[in-house]
Image (tube, rainbow, N blue to C red; front, side, top):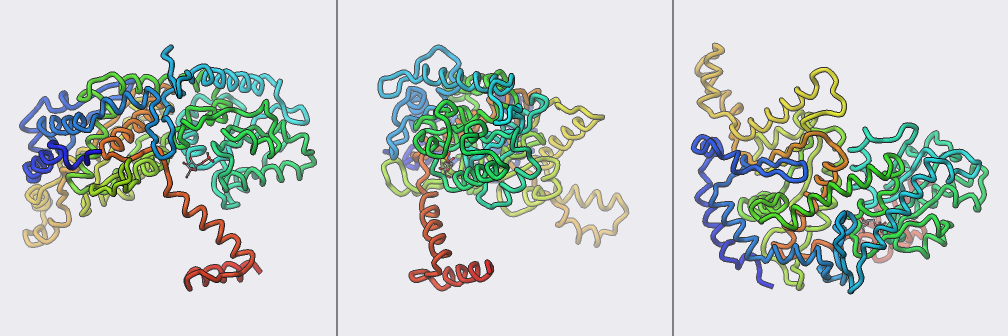
Length: 546
Ligand code: F6P
């Protein structure tokens, strides 16, 4: 493959960046009143205003040239066509097929996967109906109303965002909790006070080999049996979503209560599959299918819109612009929506597990930066925490601001205040405050010239901090589906241009293997082969157990 740094556009972007170093976005807006119109896109219910970035028309032209030189259009087509783009695991990447609402067939190894996807959706619908209507009940005949999602990583983070975001659509009487961490506190707190007779555990694990999930599933079974239920009753309270039916059967799950997954769905892209069953149980299959429809709408936009009008493409290119040409190292995601509070955590897995790679698809070490450090949280809370560093710190931190224009909970004037802060922060990031402005203000308040001079440097805010504004009318299932899909495709765009495989995750394996070995050492006390620090930590842990 050709390194992206070898593309003419890469060299041109590096030179072009130099011409913008001394440009302030304030002046870009002053010179060009139509800037916001030109740099705003809408798709699938989401509007992206990217005018508040360090860019001009030339920048966009060069970034699009980079996309073209990398063969992005062909890459997008290859993913949707089911090509084996996950080359290290020899797999297609088809989370898009899970939400394909069209009649278009999607072939894998010559076979259309859409019939099996539709059959699984129907099985989910039947199960949700059975739980709702009481034909699938607990072992004492009581309806199942508390759902426990046992799973981690992609079997937890994305699903949690979906159920939180769509809380206004939950059916009355249902509760959904999550157990992910192997820290026993997670299980204990989630199950505290629950009635086992009305509790349904959904074991969500693509592989059914993940340590945390297996330990928590075992804990759940032991908790359930300790209440007087028998092994035969397990099938009324445990269902599984996995590709590994054998392991799920061995655990005690009835084959009828297993829901299929496929190896062409990556864990962090799996919320659209039967991994979404716990969420569908609490808000219903219709809502789940609306979620799929929203994601499909974004996919269709991504698949067919010209690169320059393509929201995931633009978002991906902007990230590349800052990470590769301005030296930014992180990407903040600032959600002005309490329902989306865990969206940054989901993006951390989606983006950092996908694009945290140091070799290209052919195994050559990269000489350019790849995935950014993704972080963030909710506004306005973040304004009283880390926004200070974005406003006045020394690092360049591009930020995505995300907000619904209407609230599901419109109490008094809260939402107007939320929006006022959403925009106020962006204005501060854009415009900042110059030394002259600060000094004039201080003098106007009656401060002496000497005091104003001393204080002014502390109050200067440089502004010119790049950010995107993403808005939508209301967090409906369709919009939430589109928003998550938008970021998935952004990650794809970046991985494609960087020439890396965004769909494997070999880096997480070593820690798992070494963790298993440490567990053995904790039991045996044999620390031979460990460095002195590790041996001491093992000893300290063992000593603390007595
Ligand atoms: O963290 C590694 C990983 O494999 C993720 O990619 C995945 O989402 C998570 O573990 C859980 O895997 P599983 O669904 O197979 O239990």
